[in-house]
Length: 457
Image 1 (cartoon, rainbow, N blue to C red):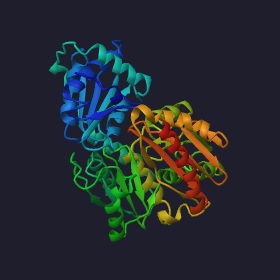
Image 2 (cartoon, rainbow, N blue to C red; image 1 turned 45 degrees about the vertical axis):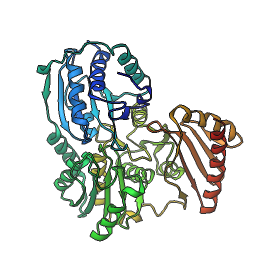
Image 3 (tube, rainbow, N blue to C red; image 1 turned 180 degrees about the vertical axis):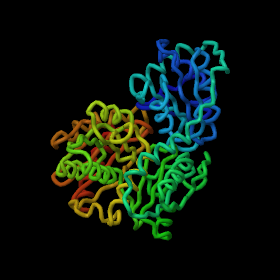
């Protein structure tokens, strides 16, 4: 078996089904992972999987590989990635793995991996790659008696609903949800119904072919039906989840998208009413308006690197109450465990909405005017994408720049960002300015610079 080193990414393992990934790959990963965890405890490991067509077979193969080392495996069954994270806090486990392609195309799949309660990233994932290379020819003898069915879904849904219910306000809400045929659909609607919310469901039946639209609510083309349903149903808001239920997208009552940074600001403002001077973390793609508004409201905002593992680590190291990413990963340590969970974030959103008479579109009208782009992805091969930000440091040296993650250029009345995507062969760019004219100007300045760099690579 040939291992593709590019499948071992910054915060997970991800590749093309039947090219980079196979049951054989999963079996070897399972064995390597269990040995890498060490023999100290031989505590069990939990495994969950999303609804992609290859996921059940990969989960079974993973379990076989892990069991071959003498370690017990607890099969949680199909569910969102946060179900695996939840298992790490509810059971005594050495770690857990979710088989998921997240929001990538349907011909891809992957593995999100935890050691203890932490998602691994960077060098730890490279250690697994090296371990798999060394063990490629090992004989793997599964021990079926160590593989146990251990469902958790009902307990997880109950926990979410019980966490939110005591904090709801008096307003009755109508919410449209769109699971994009991902696994969020087997948790979110049920949780909301238990909270007394009137729920209109779109595409909540899991289907790994994703027949209606791609399960990524941060992309405009994927929320067309959600927007239309919100208007048709006269709902208070619409909420979408990505394929594995760890990212949230929200549209207001007019069908307009609430970007991840503005959603984080809404959560932050609600939190400040309960917690004095909380630390709140946003990633480098977030608006300056977020950081400024949080500071004005009495919070301590921190800008940090993009990536669910990296943000989570920062959340714990800073003892922050809340963190979020432009991409819709939201992390609540306040009243929750600190991992990214779009279903819990859904609960917290209806909670804050139930306590106000305002429409969603009215909640941020006090912010200074700004226009911004969504994330712009520029195709760039994996082997070249990290070279571009390095070169951009020199190209934009005359500006104030922030190097937290890629290069964020501060202009007089706005900013622009270029960074390498850690999940796709692409660069990620984003821009914000006070006016459309300035936005175009800043975008052109940076795009021209990046194109010059790309021409030389």
